[in-house]
Length: 332
Ligand code: TYM
Image 1 (cartoon, protein in one colour):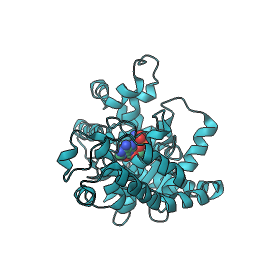
Image 2 (tube, protein in one colour; image 1 turned 45 degrees about the horizontal axis):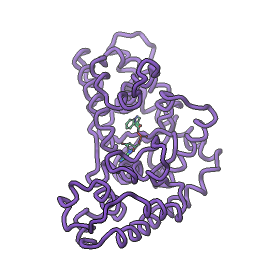
Image 3 (tube, rainbow, N blue to C red; image 1 turned 30 degrees about the horizontal axis):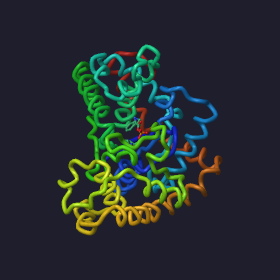
């Protein structure tokens, strides 16, 4: 099992990232050959500030290590240290079709009404993401639900490239999307996903929040006046309530049915304090480790440098096969 996944280093690691993706990264280290990276090249698709980007790349590395990503077992690096990502992106740009990229919902969401003013990078973003996984011949890509469309595109690109060049250059990657926490929603609006770009910080729980702030965010989370039902079907029309039950189940690592059998008939006056306590209990040790690690820039840079070297070596075969398959005389 070759496992590859990435996270953008802008903003904080929030509970959606943690439960939707990172928990699975940590688990997959048990029996996978894992490559995890900070997607700093993706980050420049939106306006960034140089000093902030390098600081937040280190900080996100610290957050991942604090969450349990072990740099001794997994290859942890930032994309910019491995030029093969950008190189393969260009090589795949001959295969990716405009029509495919035009269907990507993330570009539509992020560009909004300002398509003309959006960067080329925001549009070509999914081709870089395809390069990220195809470069390592990933078999499994652990992500939240929102990345599914990008991975389907990566499979389409890989398949077309192999067919067009009559080679088996790329392995088709499988998205690995956990069942319970595939899509954690905003605490303020059950129809929007929890996201770093939401202007309201009350909409998400960040790894860097202290216990009081976590408790406050849970207390203020939007809900309804009804008690909790006995089954998840009873939450079909109650997205905010469903989200809180989902978060509880994912944090406790139990099925949602178990949460409802404990809390059925109780209102949010009982449920919210229990959820706040559980969230604090799970995140407190992670945030303590994060605070210990985050300022040690020398140690973090050394980890990313070593990871970058290992990643570059692992990426070399697929990159040179790609040049060869296209008839490009690259000297690789
Ligand atoms: P990013 O940085 O937005 O998110 C990192 C991971 O967290 C998951 N996630 C969520 N899961 C559940 N509920 C949520 N509310 C939620 N919000 C985020 C994401 O699905 C993701 O798994 N384009 C990617 C980064 C990337 C990548 C890759 C991922 C670049 N190259 C190659 C996989 C493979 C992104 O922006 O994720």
